[in-house]
Structures are given as C-alpha cells and as structure tokens.
Image (cartoon, rainbow, N blue to C red; front, side):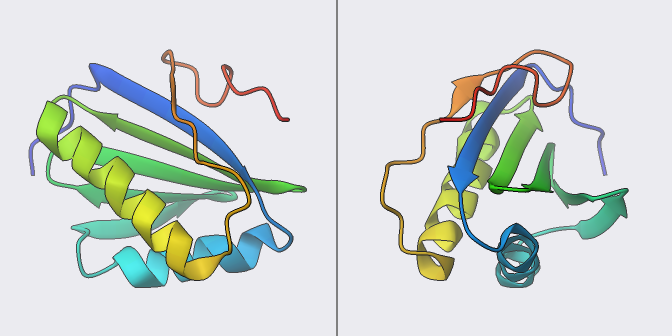
Length: 111
C-alpha cells in the first residue's frame, strides 16, 4: 500500500455518551472497507487505500481525523465514517468537519 501524502486533513468532534462503544461499532462497520485497523494507545487507526482515519474516544464524545492525498478518497472516507456514525447514534447536530494541521486534534474546539 502506498503511504498517504496527507495533503488533505480534516477533523471533527461528535458528542456521544459512550465513546468507546461508538468507536468499536464504527470500526466493526467500516472493517470491510479498510485495508487494516490498528491501535495506537487509545486511538483506532483505519487504513484505506491512500487515506488514514483516526478515531479517538474522549470523555464526552469521539474525535475523528481523516488524512489523505487523493481528494475523492479523502471525501469518500469522511462520508463513510459520517454515514456509519448515523447508523450507530441518533445525531442531534450535523457533523462539521474542519480543516486541520499536522498535529492531531489541535484545531478542535468542543462545543
């Protein structure tokens, strides 16, 4: 697999009651689309062709980060995560992705 060039980076935060359970469920629902799923501390790393997604459970929700170089795959993974999230939780607000820098989850301001 070719390593993502990470020119495109976006993050979001979604408020949920049981973040660990939601992350587990998202990984289970996305596993057939991934090349691999791994762990780095509390983070779950989902690797797709040319795109990497990081799911991080937090005390009051889930932080998600998507990095990739190919615009179509980048948006495709974002939509996959967002769509699967909609099957796991009842969303009360829209998922708002923000452009991010190289340091994970620095741009997110919890609501």
